Image 1 (cartoon, rainbow, N blue to C red):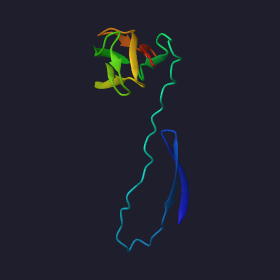
Image 2 (image 1 turned 90 degrees about the vertical axis):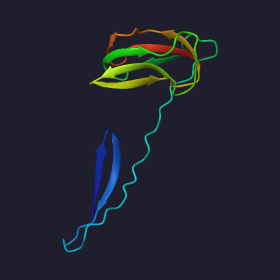
Image 3 (image 1 turned 30 degrees about the vertical axis):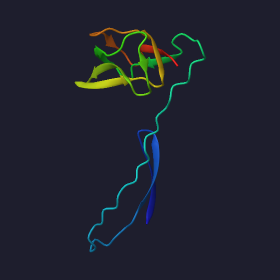
Image 4 (image 1 turned 30 degrees about the horizontal axis):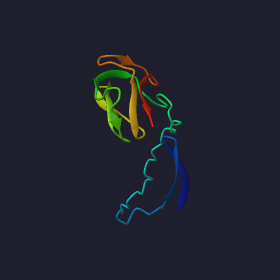
Length: 121
């Protein structure tokens, strides 16, 4: 048996590989990958205007803005749709609250980190 440390997308995995003589039929064992962890945005102080920022995760074009200022949102609610590399990606709320501002318009090109919206948590 040989052990290897493999890093994939910043996550380290400890892998054990069994050496065989080649006469045995290969057996596929289910790979148990750790579930990705959601990183929640920090909660805004009470009464803060737009305390939680929602930013573009990658460069692209805003193809739709789903909500308006004042809309109630829950964690995971789609705020806008960002097209990048010919794929549409939902930009979602990272917490419960109310939309304080929408900072993009349909058709606008954005870079990674561009402010899409703010939420009062």
